Image 1 (tube, rainbow, N blue to C red):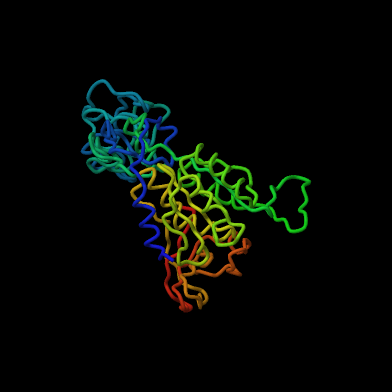
Image 2: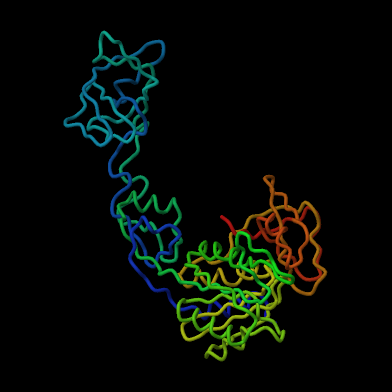
Length: 404
């Protein structure tokens, strides 16, 4: 039985370099870059105003205050997207808006709220406050210089990164191809949920695919849900054959333990697959299988729903991200303080379901058995509790999160 870190190391060492493709920036959310991206322009591309107001020479309004205003002649207006042809002279001001280019000769912007206008003298602006040189001005290239690296190979692009890329002129990027992932559930007791379909005695509704498909998509991959596979050697072998032919990665749920109705491991080997390990020293999720079939991979998850969920997060999610060349493949984590003791009397690490409240207090969410979905649904994280250990009330812990 492998320790978690050794199991993950074995998996990641088997992952090949990603395949790259060029995609539009509009399709790049949560995609992984495969090369450095350089800024095609300075940002901002010109000196511009950070306020709606008036561009001035700061020395012309140096004495202005609420008790003794200074009047300047309005020489023009610059809307966003326009420029001023000429140079601002002494005693002049120019109406300017947020983002408008700063006119030549100006070295400050006075915000609109610090000025007054007289309807009878529309070309005279009274200034009620002074301005320091370069006040309310955003400088050319102060954010990003042309040629600067704005994304690295292995970055996962979120909304803010996409905004930066767009602002510096990127229209298309090189990204890793997303792996297609077949999702199979095995078990003759499983039934597809459907309107009006009742369970026969001994049956249960299948839930693992509904849980795992969004997690697969959240890891940047393309889930493909296959039909339920009954506990039959031929049916299992046929299902695995079709899934391997159709997808880059195969994830199965159930059928990986040592029971006489567990056929996934044997079927995979009969198809020419190589099993690298099974059994990981964690709870929930000990019966976990990893193998490869030529350039494709098998992840055999336990059938219990919480076990499937936890082993996916700890072992499969990192592999899917690494298949796309992601530099960081670990789960996001936050620090919290235990609001109650977390106890693990067993001999395997226990990833306990927990919820972190708005104050950073960490609570258990109820029963921790591998089949109990209700406590998983209440949780927003996992706490890693070592074997034969009780973490006391008030202890500071890392909480592994599956949503960022």
